[in-house]
Image 1 (cartoon, rainbow, N blue to C red):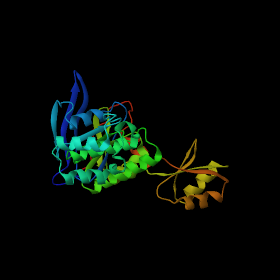
Image 2: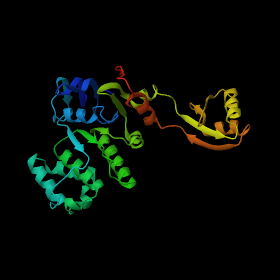
Image 3: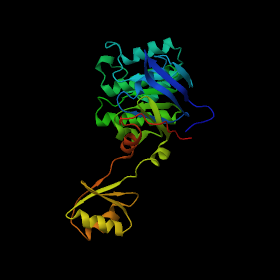
Image 4: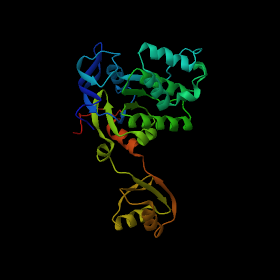
Length: 298
């Protein structure tokens, strides 16, 4: 997850408001060209951490190092409604002394050329997100912090945004995503960090973190769940009898599960168990009742 020169590095970061500690002793880093998920329950400290990285709130202690100025994009980025997209880009470009090459790159990577004649007030939510990213790239941002970027987007716009994030990653940008849409995060993220009550609980490559959560599997509902359970156990499958049916964990393919069960009971339904990021969230980022001990991956 890390490199000789991380794109973003946090070392012992603590953020407080008055006497209340919002984020406590958080440390992690990530290299360039990665999409990183920041997971946590409401109030876990995700947005506070975003604001600290971007310099919007001070840290009480710790050190934050970024590769260039980070750019934070919150939901509902707003621009002057009557200003045309091309005029906004030109104005922003002059402010940051962007070259023609930088202007062309921002347009090409984000695809805003398709609507640069439109007024900002006419843009859809997805278009406004693309424009916000283009403005950030004009400023030379190589670390992009996106807070709930899929809120208000239709499925097609979400797919388009995810494609754009992959393009930015391939271009060497580091993208940090904070979202409750776990299914979308799972499609695009390379690494993940989880917070619980302001403390870091796990950080690492998605594959490494996945190895620390319950395995995926299937839930089978049948005419005789007891018989199905016994048959699966006899077939040396990791089966558990639950109130929802028989849960089969591990890598066994759906066809193999079906073949074993169908010999002993009528199969009513087989569903895929919870997706990976749902299981990561449950294990490391749900609110729970206690503050978890810090657990990080090397």
